[in-house]
Length: 174
Image (tube, rainbow, N blue to C red; front, side, top):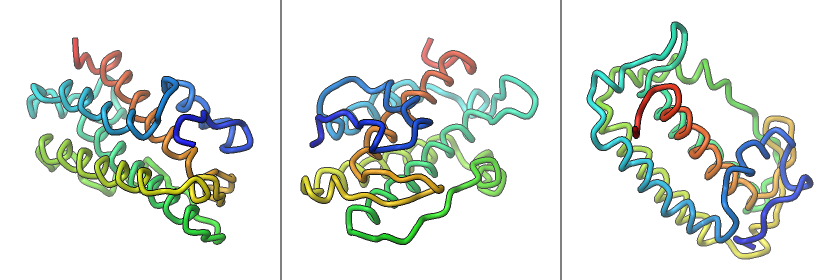
């Protein structure tokens, strides 16, 4: 199941923007390995660089990283709930309100990166533990139906998307 790319029946069309960024293969192993690339890109980022915003009203590097951490927490919870057969709809998250309330700019960048790595380790552990049946279970979040396993692909693609933004708009990793 971990190598089967999600179909349009497994997630809302919007999320295929992320799913499409992930290479074929075992998505859980991709989750385990790609975080190392992101961490390597961030190893030499100074506090000054981490506070940079490429335009007024845009998130700082720290806020982008915090968003990645928060979003992965939310998506991993969704996958857990669905895999356990929970049929209660899960509400969405307002990423801008969450980010404004989080105070990521007050934290050292290394702490945020550490959180992201810890969250990823927990996500990998969760997805590795799922049986094929649990992987296929479905639930509703943000008004859309998802397959639990499709969320692994979304998490991987979401990280790749924001890593690209950090390179292209923030000049990191160059």
